Amino acid sequence: MTDPTTTPTGEWAPIYAERLHHIEGIEPPIEWTNPPAGLLAWNAPFGEPEPTDAVAEDRTLDGPHGPIPVRIYRPASGEASGIGVVWIHGGAFVGGDLDMPEADLASRGLVTRTRGVVVSVDYRLCHDGVHHPVPHDDCWAAFTWTHEHAAELGIDPDRLAVGGTSAGGNLSASVALRSVTEGPGLSQALLIYPVVHAPLPTPSEELAACLAKSPRVLTFTNQSDFINENFLGGPVATHITPLAFPGHAESLAGYPRTYLENCEFDDLRASGEMFGRQLADAGVDVTMVTAAGVPHGHLNAIGSPLTHATLDRIAARLTDA
View 1 (cartoon, rainbow, N blue to C red):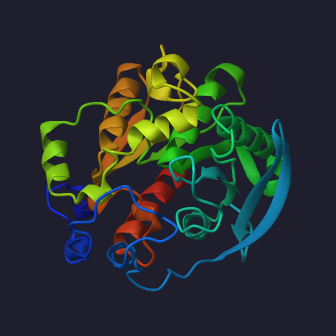
View 2: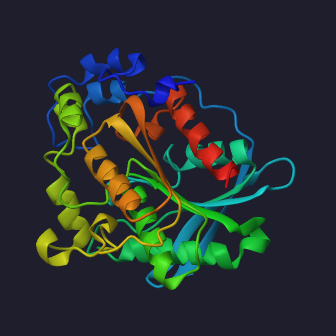
C-alpha cells in the first residue's frame, strides 16, 4: 500500500498549508531570541505530545575537548530490546540542545516504539571559537563510549545505530564514515534531513518548484554560507574535509547500511538526495524516502501526525535490523 506521508505531490500538507499565511512576507535573517509573532504561530504545537514509555538519565562523559553531556533514554517498563541509537540533534551547528523536541521527544518516541536505548548527545556548538572537528569529536566520543558500555546500557553492540537530524544528520553521517576506517562498526546510519555538502547542490526542477512555494524564511538560501563557514572556521574552499561534509568523501565504500529521509519543502533535500545517490553508486544498502508536504526540521513539530509517521519509519528500520 502506498504511504501518503512519503508520496510527494508538490503541495504542502494541509496542517502546514493552513499556517503559511503566518509567515508570508517574513524575511531572513531572523533574531531567534525574539522571533516575530508569525513565526511563533507557524511553529506552535499541533497538539499534545504523544504518550511515551521512556525514562531519562543525564550523564556527563569525558571527551577530547572536555565534558560531554548526554541523556540516556530507556523503557520505563520491561526489559530493553537490545536496540541502541546514538542520537544527534540539529540546529545549524549553533543551536539546539537535549530538550528540543527533535532531541527529547524523538528519543522518547523511538524508545517507546522499539523498547531500545537512546543516547542523545549534547555536543559543543560553534560559538566562541568552536569549529569543526570539535562537534564531530564530541559525537564520535559519545558513540565509542556507548559501544564500549553497551552491555551496561542494555544494548546489543551489533544493533547499535547512529542517527540525527539536519546538522545532527551531518554529524551522524561523519561518525558513520569514521567508523568505516577506525571502527567500531555500527549497524546502520539514520540520516534525517541531513546536510552533507557545502555548498548545497543545485536543486532538481521538482525541488525548485517546491521551494518556489516556500516562504523565504523557511529556506537556507541566505544562511548556508554563514553556517558553513562558521562550522568550518573559515572559507569552504580551504577548510572543507570529508568528516566535516561527508558528501565530499573520495570513497563511500564500506559505508554502513543507511536510511535517509528528506523533507519535501526543504532546500537541504538537494544534499540528502545527492548523498543517497552517492551511497547507492558505492554499493551501499541505502533506503531514501521523502516526507511529503513538510518543511525542514519537522521533527520539532509537537503533536504532528507527520512527525509521528517519521518516527514510525525510523523505528521500523531499527527493529528490522
